[in-house]
Image (cartoon, rainbow, N blue to C red; front, top):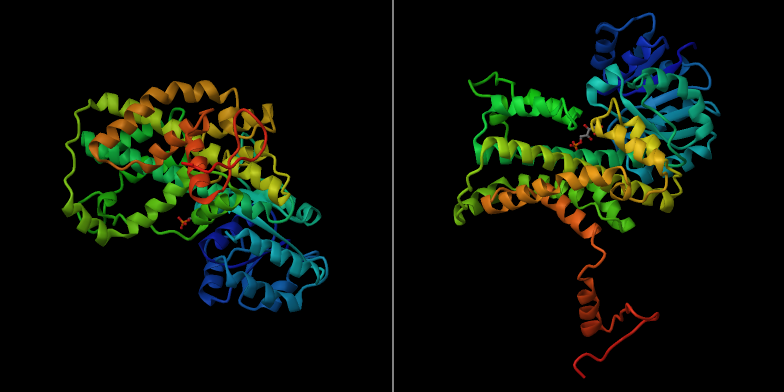
Length: 467
Ligand code: 6PG
C-alpha cells in the first residue's frame, strides 16, 4: 500500500508517463488488461524498486496509498467510463481519479458529477507532448476539483516539462477546464501543422526546393523567431530515408491525413460560442479534403493548372518565413480568443498568461512565440484578442506586405494555402471597423423581414423594400 501513483492504460503514453513518475522518485503502479503491456513495463528499463504493474485491478488499487491517485491514460470515449466502472468497487471515499486523455469536455463534467455522488474526486487533465513528452516531461493541463489537485500537484510538477526551471503545469480552473484547454491546444496544433505543410508545398512547387534544402530552411527557421517543436520536427522529417525504397520517406507517405477529433471539436465548439477560428476550421477541412484522394485525382484531370510565376528562391524563402510567423500568431490568437470566451461561458476562470506559460515547453505547440504571448497577457489579463495587444501590433504589421504577396502568389500559382489565406482574411476582417455586413442585414430584412439596426439612431427597423 505504498505506491504514490497509479496509472491505468499501459500503452506507449501510459508506460512512458509511469516511468517518468518513477524517475522522479515516486513509486508508481500500473494496470492494464493486456499481459504483454504489463510485462513490457516490468522489463523495459524502469527502476523496479519504484515501478510495478498488474493485470488484476484489485491488486492494482490495493497497492496504492490513500488517498489513491489514479490516472487514466486510455482512449477517449466509452473506455474511460469502463475504466472508471472497473475501479469503483475497490475505491474508498476521497480517492482521486484523473483522466489524462483527450476526453470531450462535457464527458468530463458528467463524470465529475457522477463520481462526486460516490465521494470520489475526478478531474480531467490535458497531457501534451506525445510519447517522448510523457517520458521526459509533458505539458500538463489540469482543471476541476482544486482540492483533489493539491494531492497530485507535487507529482505533476516533478514529472512535467520545465521552461527555464518553471514546471509546465498549473491548475487551470474548475470543471472541465483542463480538457477544454487541451482541446483548443489541439485545434491550434492542427492549424500550425496545416500552415507548416502549406509553406512546404509553396517552397517545393514554386521553387523546386529539394528535401535537403527544405531541411536547411526549416532548421534555420527553427533558430529564429519561428523556433518551435513543429518546425524542428519538420526539419528532421526531410532528412529521413525510407527503409523500403531509395527515396526520402516524406515523399513516400500518402497525402491523406487522419484525425481523432480534437481539432473538429475545437471548431464545432467555437461555432457554438460564436467565436471565429477560421484557420483552425480550415485545418480540419483540409484533413477532410485530403481524405478525398480519389475525387481529387478525378478533379485534377478536369482542370488546367496555371503556370507558376517565376520567383527567386531567396525572395520566396524570406516571404515564406514572414508568412509562417504571421500565421502562427493568428493561430494562437484564434485559439486563445476562443479560450477567453469559453472561460466566461463555462465559468472556467482561465488565466491566459498561465496557459501560454505552461505551453512554453513539453507540448506539441511549444514555440518561442509563447514567451511573447505570455508576456502580452501578463501585461493585460483582459485583452480579448492577441491582435489587440500593443506588443503584437508591430510584430504583425511588419509581416503584412510579405503575407499579402505570398497569398497572391499562391492564388496565381494555383497552390492551395487555405490556412494562410484564412489567417490573412481573418486579420483583415477583424481589423476592419467597417464590414459589408450591412448588406446582409438589408437582404435579411428584404426577404424575411428580419429587421436591422441603424448607424444613426437606436432601435429595431424594418422596411417594405421596393415599396
Ligand atoms: C499532444 C497531441 C496528442 C495527439 C493528437 C493527435 O498534445 O500530445 O495533441 O494529444 O497526438 O491529438 O491528434 P490527431 O490524431 O487528431 O491528429
